[in-house]
Length: 212
Image (tube, rainbow, N blue to C red):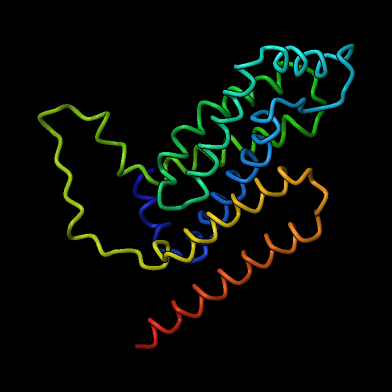
């Protein structure tokens, strides 16, 4: 499997997929985190419904509700930062696994379990993508030897523009919530504009480097 991942790391379209998958999955948690951090209810569904009862119980837990929000914000922000995406994915994995199991256990309908399952599969892929950073934990001490000095730097994925875009995505989303969610159009425009501009900037820079 790791050989397949090594081969995929040489494919430009796959690299783009990984970068924007980090943004997408991280965004989902950052977006959902602010409500919990502020101590507000996540949904208006009646507690008489199974889903509403579940969220009301979580909300009434108080500090634990805030803790979930901070955990989601930190893991999502790390994932979107690109620079610390491996740590973000490792933190994200147990959280999204728990969320996925809950959506399948409680009657969330058909859409939500499908989405959380896809998020779980995407997170597993992101963890596997960075396997060289954690595989050492599963090797015997006398067999540990890691030398990445001879591996060429991936200038495309390590372009600072991806990091800046991730930081902006997090800031825009948090600001949108703090402003009460009243400025959806500027928020969406800012998110799309940042994503498109960053892609074009990095792509042109990559093409320019290949021409030299």
